[in-house]
View (cartoon, rainbow, N blue to C red):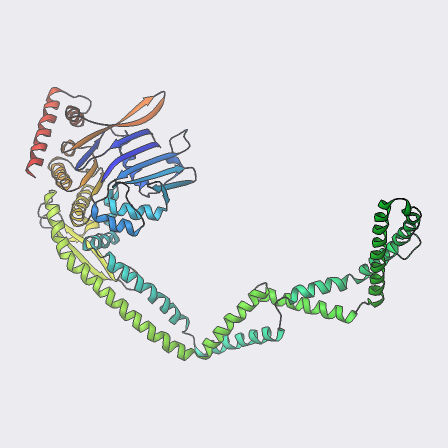
Length: 557
C-alpha cells in the first residue's frame, strides 16, 4: 500500500506532502489545477521517463518520495532483488537534476531497472491515455499472461529461445556451398602461409627499431664520440689534462692539512674514471664500423614487419589473434561435414525443447483464457455494457521468438445484433476506458498488486455509465487501495478519503497545493463538481443526497 507521497519542485508543485490510506482515495480539483501532475510524480518515482523541464522554474532539482508498505506475500520476490523493507516499509525516492536522475530505495541508490521491477509488484498505474494501448493486440497477450500467471513459463521459453538462437546462427553460418568453401579455404591457407613464412617474433619490431635508429645515425654517433673524446682526454686542453694539473698543484700542500688529503682522493678517483672512460671510447671508435648490408637488411625487415602488422590488425598481438582465428576456421572448413552433423543434432534437440515449451505456454494461455473471457464479460456487464459479447482470438506467429508462438486479439460486440469484431475497430474512447477498467478489476482480483492508481478513468462517460464505473471502483477498493483522479461527482461521492487539489498564485508564482477534506468539505466539493461556479442550496442538497446514497451503497457491498 502507498501510504505517503512527497513532491518537491515538480512542474507547478512547489512542496506537497500527502498521506494516503487503504480503500478508495479520491482526488478532485479544477481543470489545470495539477491533478495529473501528482499522479505523474508517482509514475516518475516508479521509474518513468524524466526530462529537465519537469523541474520547477528557478529550481535546481525536482524530488519525489513515496513510502510503501508491501504485502507479506511480496517479501520473497523483493528478497530475490535484494530489497528488504525496513520496519515494514519501503522508501522509494527519485531526485531529478539537469541531465540525470538518482533513484533510491531505503536510502540506497538503485538502477532504473530495479525501481521498475519493484514498482511492478507494488502499484498498477492507469494513465490518462492507457486505454489507447488496448488498440494494440500485443497488449492483449500481455493481459492474458498476467491473468494466467505465465511468468515462469515465459522465462523458460525465453531461456530456451536464447540457446536456440545461438545454435541456429551457428547452423546458418555453416551453410556454405562447396565452391564458396574451397574459395575461403584457399584464401585462409594463403594468409596462414604468409604469416608463418614471416616468422615474426614477439619483440622483433622494437628490437629492429632500436638497431635501425643506431645504424641510421652512425655518422652522428662517431662525430659525437670523437668530440667527447677530445674534451675528456685527447688534447692539451682536455679534462684529464686539467685534473692532472690540479693534482700536481694540490700535492704540494696536502701535507699541511689532513682535510686536503680527501680532496686529493676525489681528484685521483675522477682521473681514474676519466682514464677508463677515454680507453672505452677509444676502443669503441676503433671497433665501430658502418655496415651498409646490415643497415639495408634491418630497414627491409622492419618495413616488412610493419606492413604485415598494418594488414593484420596493427600489432603483433592482433597478428597472432588473426592467425588463431583463421586457423580455427580452417579446421572448421576442413571438417565442416562433421561440424554440420553435430550442430544439426544440437539444433534439432533444442528446437524440440523450444516447441515443447511453446506448446505448454500456448496451452496455459488458451486454457486460462476461457476463465478470463468469463470474468471480463461479467466486469463489462457491471460497467453498463448491455448484451456485451467478449472473446479472444488466438493465431500463430510465422517465426519463433522469445515471447512464444501466440498472437492474441480481443474481440467484442458492445451492441445487440452487432457481429463480434476486433476491439480496436468497434470501441470509442469512452468505451475503451471502461473496458480497461473492467480488465484492471479482473486482474486486480487475480494477482497480488494491492495499489491501483487511476488517472481520469471517467474520460468520455456520464450518467448511468458513470454510476456503474463508480460502483466498480468502490467494489475494487474493498480489497485494494485505489487512488483515483476524477471529474465526476458520481465517482467522487464514493470516496473513503477525499482530497482536493488547488492551484494558487503566491508572490506572483503559481503553485499547486493538496489537502484532505472533511465530510462537510467533501460535500461542498461535490457541489462544485455538480454546480460549477454557481453552488446553490439545491446543488448542496443534491450533493448531500448523492453522498448519502453512495455511503449506503458501499455498506451493502
